[in-house]
Length: 151
Image (cartoon, rainbow, N blue to C red; front, side, top):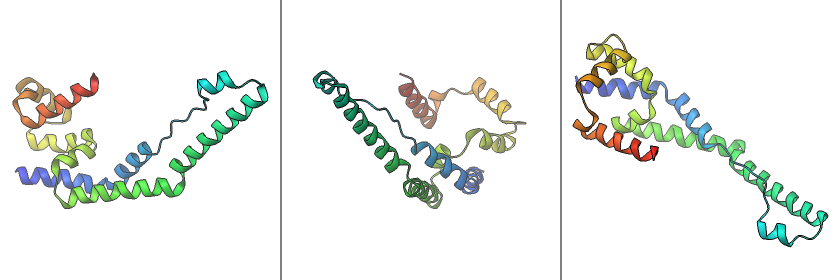
């Protein structure tokens, strides 16, 4: 039975490989841009024309940053890296890594009937009543990691 569950998880990852890779590439292809000039330059710039030049230079740097991060080639390369990483997880049969990539709600609804529940909500309700995350090393580790993120 555990082997069947592992196969279902890895198969779900394989089927959703491209959309997952695309979403991850999109998330990594964000650029946080803000035009600014250092405070010391602001204080030392005596004229409007000189400050306008500094602002224009700062804006040009931000455009270069965006172009380098969001160029079609860079976004495609990021997507290809994500696809390769997913393929490596599948090839290694790395179920814990697969679980970090697969959409959890969809997977839960697929696995719930195998655990004797009608759907994922019923399964989670049952698990919450009968088990504590600290009772299992994987869920305790996940709980600890989530606690660290929240602080």
